[in-house]
Image 1 (cartoon, rainbow, N blue to C red):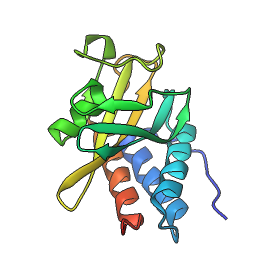
Image 2 (cartoon, one colour):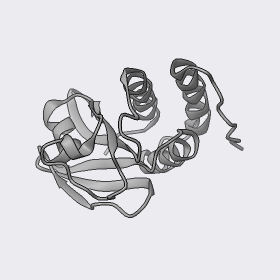
Image 3 (tube, rainbow, N blue to C red):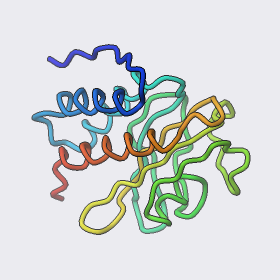
Image 4 (cartoon, one colour):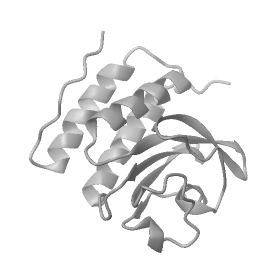
Length: 165
């Protein structure tokens, strides 16, 4: 049985090192991508400080993301590729860190309390298939350490899941 432990590190890199270990243990032996996304969203939501939403959107067509497992308030169900921070991450094929969502052109406000956002695209076989989205009520919450840490967590998620159709 997995047991989550409190993460209290002075530095973000140390925090993400320990979080990678916890995520690896949590996903160990499970290959279902939806189950793994649900558990990962719960782990992030309950361990990352100053966040109010953590979850996934998956491409259902080449033009549209659809809501997947998440923790937080109810969210927008469908997001067009190229729209909002999530759609921009898919279109660019790279992570997007937004210091203040109110300054991001075309931001989609699913939760009015969200002020900063970090979106990491999920890719396999050379193509993006979804995003990991994390929101915070604190302007400037995410930085390069968060981006690197969450990208490493996303890689664990991708590697742990069986993507055979």
